[in-house]
Length: 236
Length: 309
Image (cartoon, rainbow over all chains, first blue to last red):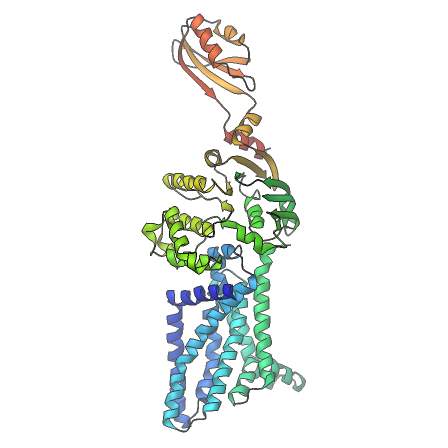
């Protein structure tokens, strides 16, 4: 635990020591705010549906931008060699880095609660549903992030890591949008595998174990694969 | 004490290190010498638990690198090639980060950091980002990082690569100082470096150890014979045969020298020194010695001979 905290602290700070955190936060809030506010008055309902509609797609682009540096950067600069020789386990390295990026996503979402408060001032908002929606967004982000850290562990090139993460995330994002084209027998499987389907369930205000298990498994598999990629240095 | 027995490391079937046996005693300053790609870095990476050997065992103070890796890591300070330290952190923050990972107790942390800053001469650059430092200072930060937990064993991979001559001297002095009560293993392909710092040299080529001795021992061993170059005035043509009759001389040849002088290239048998006898001979024959110079085969020759087959 001590080691995870050490890694976490350094990672989290380095987001703010470089322009990444500021750029990602600014653009995310600008775009999310734009889509949220233009549609809000069109629909004329006091809920966060427009926000919850657009963030899953935004995450497909923004989370790879957060995750791309996590491991690729250290591989490129060689700093990871030192990390590998400190008394610390590979899984602790992965977890510390993962949590740092997750907290950054949390901060990003925290800023969007401004929208929630403004909506609740305008009309009678279902607070429970909004809360569930945020839990859902965090889980969704955590799942994308696990894919992103895996992508980052594949390469020492951050651009490649970004594109790989984008491709994997987009694949899981698109699954429930193509149900129309696949045979009915496959449809339910694809729907279960799709990342947004589970989010929309939770955003409706019902937190079901099925959905939690899905996100838990995606996160677990992503982190396991990333940690496996680190151990590949050990050779045959 | 570090013990490597039958250590082999292969990458995709190609052997980078091939059946190395080596025992390193406490207090040794061991120079690991070899051409690029000989297996120096691979061996060091196995010692530092970066990766385990494919076969064979490595133990450090009785702990196995594969089985008890955490114990081993705690005993070792490592500076990889090119000193990879985070460029976006400043020196103090970085040292605090490392000391946290190295589990230095909080109450001792600041005094230990202060101590290491003094030892490595980092006072002037404390609040600078490491990325802005010169190569020499970055290397010092790397050394500080390796020593912060006061390890018994220090492992440096090419510690002076890319430094200017002054920085090289500084880093060498630092390493020598550190090595007084520790075991130090350093790799290099600069020969004067091992001559200047090490008490023991291991030469590795194509994954195998080809020599293991003290610097002096290695020279004597491979050199075989010493050569004495003398320039004489007033010597007659029989100087060659008279010199040849001295005991210990194996061969004498003439070499081109200034006008009016004779140059003699005298090859001497192993372990012999004929300079005194030669001087007395010159006095007897009233030759004037203009110059006399004994050539010992340098480590360069040794290295060349051992690694070029």
